[in-house]
Amino acid sequence: MQSQDILNEKSLEIILNFKPSDKYDKSAVNEILKLKGNIKKIITLLSRQEQEVLDLRYFQNLSCEKIAQCINKSKDEVEKILIAGTKNIKEKLKQGDLVFEKIQKVIELPKIKQETKEPQKEQKQIKQTPAQKQAEIKRQPSFFAFIFSLAFYVILFAGSYFIIQKYFLHNLPALNQLFLNSRDFALETGSGKSAGGKNKAIRISGSSSLFVLARRWENSFHIDYPKYHIDLISSDSDKGINSLIEGRIDIANSSRPITFLDRKRASEHGLELAENRVALDALIIIVNKKNPVDEISLDALEKIFSNEIKNWKEVSLNSFEKPLTPVIREKGSGTNEFVINRVLQGDSFSSSIISKNLNNELIRYVAEHEGAISFTNSTNYPWKNQDIKYLKVKNYDNSPAVSPFEEQKLNKDAIRYGDYPLAHYLYLITQADAPKNVQNFILWVLSKEGQKIVAYSGLIPVYNE
Image (cartoon, rainbow, N blue to C red; front, side, top):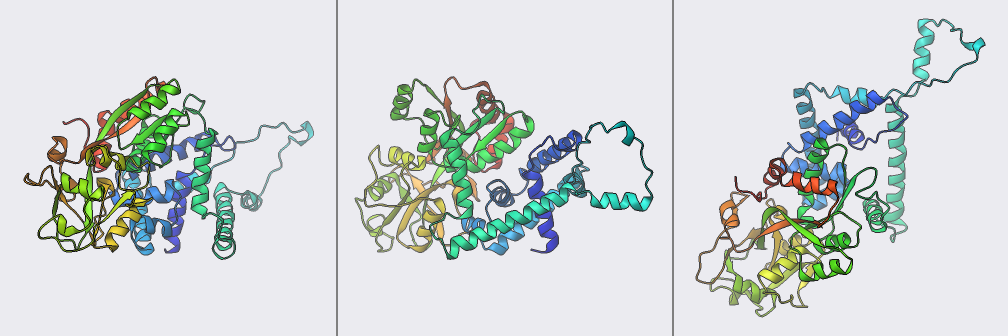
């Protein structure tokens, strides 16, 4: 990056991570919070790619190298997307008469004037010359200088930690993992404010399928309801629901509905659960690009993931003779649960099937192995990956196969009306007697504003307008 690009990105990072303090003038604090809200709102209007990279950079605090790994791009491409996103934010701020230079001015927050009384003999003011006044101004440290000093020491610490971890103490966690672990620890130990606490924090965790959508909801909801704050982390559906039952969070993101075992566990804790359908999605069956098969039936999928058939020649007459290698997500994934219930009719996966912890690992495996087959949610489908393709799905061998996509968008009618066999809902699960702020968030998600964000995120709103 050029030095000006680094400065612009750092300024944006300072604004988005700004926390109010009594040390600074109230009007200046209000100004920077207003600018922060405007920037968050603008981010939701950028391209999906820019949103994804900006979210990973500024809200999940990942480095450009880590972002490149997450989205299967080079570091240079990630930096270009960051620069483009920053420029687009500047342009949209200008359109709203909020020129980007205002960021630099707001960063230099004036201190609150001290009202301490001086002794009577010192109240007489001494007249200063212009040169003395200028020298006095130069001696006063600005907030901007403080932030850059702080940034210098943070970068120094991060660099030192990285070198120590990489070359000397390999058992230390990576820096970004250290940050994520501290957030998880706060939620696990309940050290975060409760939903009914003074800061009205709404704690959300669960399925990675809903994480990006939930982040967009968070940004827009905070603008409409600034008195509410949202703490959001990504895990999986099982962990989210378990945390909800144990009182560590207020809302569980889930790619599966509540099960009998969930209700039983909740009952043992004296709770009743409520599930809220918030979006429609589709499970996408993915294979290696070299695989000649273009469609598959539910019956064939059942035999594959129960390990009844071992070779692609048993799936289709025109398929190639390669060993079948099914790949699934880790235990606890709501997507796995959907496949178990919809495809395997309630039976478990074969114990010999390969599992991967992350969607990116799963996709990479399929791209590297010609006989591999797996599944992912539509929002995680890798359109830029030239070594992957999706299959059309049919209910029976002699029924018509239906595509989940139409020109890189979900096949809306086929999914809404059930023609695509692997359509499913995404859920926000709460306690039945959830606090008022949680109820307000759910109502907002199901409102026209919240469902617009569902559509913008590439999913299908629950209500057909």
